[in-house]
Image (tube, rainbow, N blue to C red; front, top):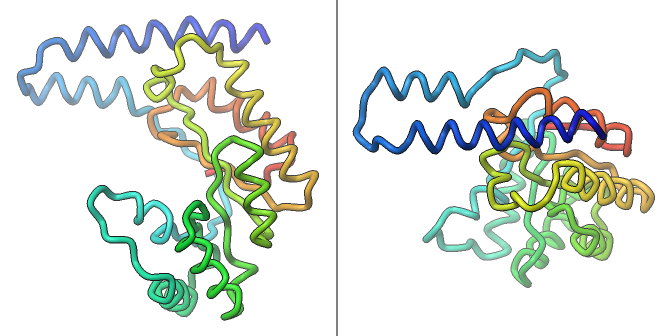
Length: 206
């Protein structure tokens, strides 16, 4: 796609600007304000709000945190439901994760659980095995996060996510997509990304 090829060039220029800007490590409020304006480009969106909680997903990714017992995770999930949370994102990779998911399903939380997945079909397969009805597929969307994949064109990165979304939808899952680091994403790229995953069947982008 020609548009993505042009954005590949923009990605390189943006990262070079940021690297150049950060060469002077001394704190200067005016310079940091300039950097903030350079990196964060908010775009107002009209959206329908869904209360989505990631305590049992992102909260557990904090370095040094003691992972709660499955029973404790289940109690946290039940309390979150009681205060009005509509969707709970959970991890599925460890035995403790999977035990917690089973306990939550037994307590009637199955419809509101969403498995956190990478843009990888094996993650979707695991969610299916654990009887999830919805998954959140996560992938970076900012050029800053793409720095580790400079050898991969944007079109390839988008295709990987689209293929995973399509695979999940074909297997009967409701799909929403996490745009990692979206507040620092280049809107022209993010717009293409959102449209691509929506066309593949994703119901929500966040």
